[in-house]
Image (cartoon, rainbow, N blue to C red; front, side):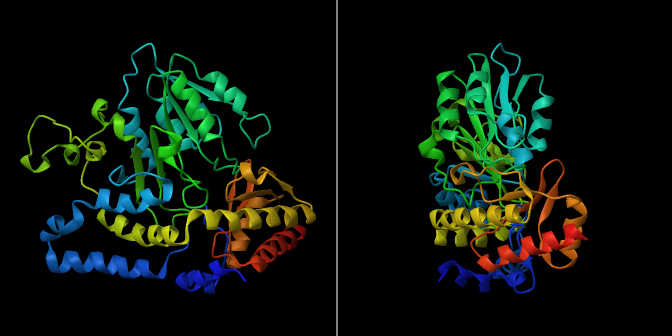
Length: 377
């Protein structure tokens, strides 16, 4: 018996689809509809008073729900709109005109992150993959030197599901006097994570995927002891010590609010809360145990069907997704969607298939069988 399948009734879309796309958009919890109705009711009945009755504090109070999932403390996360904004805030904390102005990243980092780094005027060094799946740890460590200001890494690579050694990378960054920002978008909610224990300086991510929170709710963690020394240039009135004074001079809030910017995205945070609560209640270790078992089964099924797998075989190096190299992968993915088998496709990688805690074992067989059938047509 799989006790986690008791949660299936909380996700209406599972009644009508084989849902294998939680790495891209997690299934919506049933209670999220009630949360969004709550937002509408508060706006309708309380009007402007809703700000002082809880809305204004939501970037931190909702962040506290997430803190329990990724190993942060209360008041150490602020909600943002997306990772691009989070990255811009982090980057704006540095002076890129100094000699120490090097950014080290993996060449398979998410493009949105790369776009931000390339336009800074900083020296940007990327470490290539030697197999299109993994990033050699020794090459990453060797690229970090005394002129490195920031190490930027994806904890789990979106293109292959390779999990990097965040502990080793953090140690090396700090030995070299650099800071590290970890993009945990593809790990938070499915891979155990302890940002405090790891000592990462910044962590960024979003709620769209494994956290089941929908779009528009990104998050930024900043190590508490760094707050007094960081004054992000990407800022706004919500980062002021006393924002409702509307003072012309910026006086940064002493706490995590100093990393806010403009008016927060309230409806997106209402959308995100239910997923955070569910992941927190189940616990990431239980989710990870099932994920490792099901992704191992997916790999075996894909290989039995004659497909190449573009994800690590070692479960300790693999996130929650299995990437399958299928001829005409894009067209097959489109047809799968028409048949209510939901996966996605990434150029140069393949079809990405992602079970979550609500996935039945038999659905693994169904999706691979359907891919195999379509590939023969």
